[in-house]
Image (cartoon, rainbow, N blue to C red; front, side):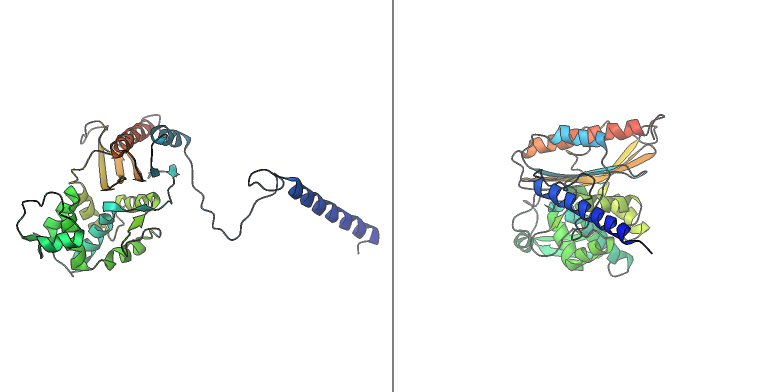
Length: 319
């Protein structure tokens, strides 16, 4: 048994330590730091999300986006390692046309399940499409009143030029609710594809492209089909704009599978890059842009420097 003296000393030590903590807490006036440097500042009401921060990638992002008038979200991940970087990665942005990534997957899932055929016809009147979209879509000025595509043709138009009328026709065919169901199934928990305001995050889009690279969006077959449609993309003024000429079967060959999105004050681009023996995801979202063309230029420059970073990394002395 402990002696009374020892218990008394122990009690005094406890009181002394508690007093020191309380005094430090009272006199401390610094900005949002714990009372003593060695005390952890736990908040049990919050969920902590840890992310790796690559200083080189952080420097590239800061260099190219500093001074830009608008808000940005960036997610970059090396798909061969734990090397990653995010800036406002979990900040919400309007999806613009990035919702079509989930549309492609949802439609092709219906095809795989036998509920739909690539040869099925979709027919709408132009006036009904204008009413549904809110305006005449680009390229339909001289179109006939009845617009008709096969499912395959509509998917190709979505992949090649991000066709809004074709997207509406596809979504109405399978049901808009299928997009959110698919997003939930993939685990992109911050992506909202219901109601009037679709939204997502750079991290969610990055995760989608990671799954796509791994052929895990619905299935290997569906993933390969999505990649095939996205590879038709003709909107290449952002991520690929300043990259060297694309080559095939060469030591420095590269392939970018990506999807853009845009609305007034919004410019997005995201995808996965296969570079030699390496692969990485890069997503840049933006909103509240004052100068959209300047943002596009900054995104192209940022993408070029990220490409050079991974190219050096994948070289003989790389990791």
